[in-house]
Amino acid sequence: MQIDYLPNVHSSAVFSRGETKVLSVITVGKISEKQLVDSIFNRSYKHFIHHYNFPGFAVNEIASYRAVSRREIGHGELVEKTFDYLIPASSSFPYTVRAVSEVLSSDGSSSQASICATSLSLMTAGVPLIRPAAGIALGLFEGQIYNDINGLEDKLGEMDFKIAGTKKGICSIQLDVKNQGISHELIKECLEKARQARICLLTEMKKHIYHPRPHLPTQVIKCRQLPVPKEKIGLIIGPRGRTINQLTEETGSTIEVQPDGYILIYHQEEDQLEKTCQAIKKIIKNI
Image 1: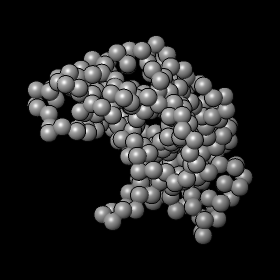
Image 2 (image 1 turned 60 degrees about the vertical axis):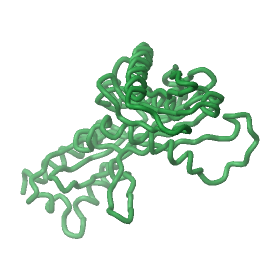
Image 3 (image 1 turned 30 degrees about the vertical axis):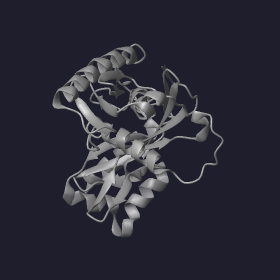
């Protein structure tokens, strides 16, 4: 494992296990940069986005890179769902986070390696994860359970059981079977083996970074949350947005009004953030 692998990104980490190696890169942006999910059932927004890339050279193949495959989409979703309840809510962490897992080589579960790499890079970026996560894939061959299966064991075996989570419990699972099914006792044994492997991985990860860094990297845009009474938000916006546009022009800050009575102020420099906060407080106090 290695954190701070790339020099000029918000955060990065490499996780290697056997022949499998994954590079995770984190980008932190404003909360307004969230992704709209417009499905046939409802409209929602994502503040944590994970993309998974599996190029041909990861398995020694020469292949042109066209559209993202269904496999890449599925693996990306699996990693994203693992962190659904580990990333803090936008009310306490007003940022949008994008993680990209680049598979550099693969002979095993690259999706579970992506979970480990993403966990390392999120903590390196200062994202206040509730708990770090790790994942492991288990296989089955002639009644014997195998930990951390490689590509050949996956191809010839009877099962691919991916289990990811924290020290406290499981966050995501994915199970493929090629036989007629597996028993409850076998599932229990798999869950216990996965728990032991997960604890081992998390212990190794803590040797590199024990908990999330207390501050975001210097390259990340800074944010201040300012509580404002709802009846005074209109005064800050001004007629036809004149007041808020003037503040933005004078300070260079990005000001975003939230429906819950908060104003988010973004800027790269702390002094400009403070200047904008004082200007808004002055507008409220004077009126």
